[in-house]
Length: 224
View 1 (tube, rainbow, N blue to C red):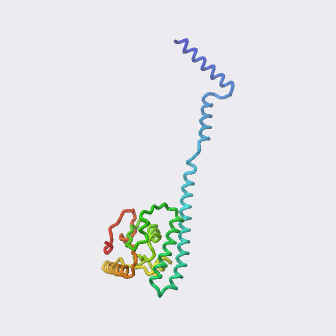
View 2: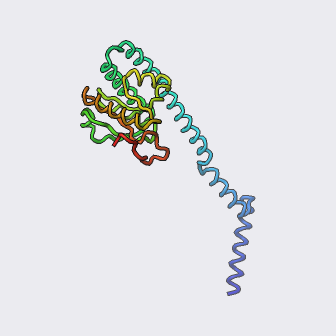
View 3: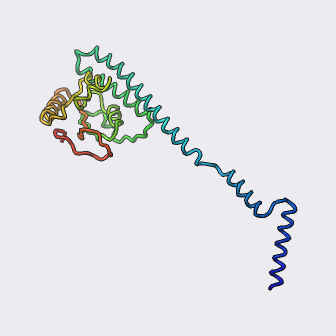
């Protein structure tokens, strides 16, 4: 057994000596070189992680900027149209809906958000459309999908939103004072009477404000 072990040891030493003489490298150096080559061939995905993240952020900001410019342009054009239609309030409602259909669809298309629509066959029916409010996209989506002849209800401060707020008022939509619950309920009753009298549809965001965490908030009085 000892002779066999000695013989095996000697053969290993001869092999290593032959390796050294043939290549000028030791076995350990060869292994190190092989590992180094393998590491160099392996793609460095970590080098691209940050650049991909910055690229996504940049693309998002570009899309938001394009949306803003697009909305400002369409809002300015339709504001001029509605100014010429001041004596005809119902026609202003109709034009406001046409603006919403165009602008809402453009916003969703530019942003590239995937959407799934169910029950589209009912979108042309006269109805009260109730929506949650988790992001600004809710507004554009519901403007796109509701029929012509629809009015919305918003806080009275919306008039101070550049161009959009003025167009909202020109389109003869409804505003309420959220700081006065009694007046708000009365405004809702007036809205109901106007909707029935003129055969209109109505858009309501019953939470009264945007949800910060995506959960449904308690409904405001007058919307139940």
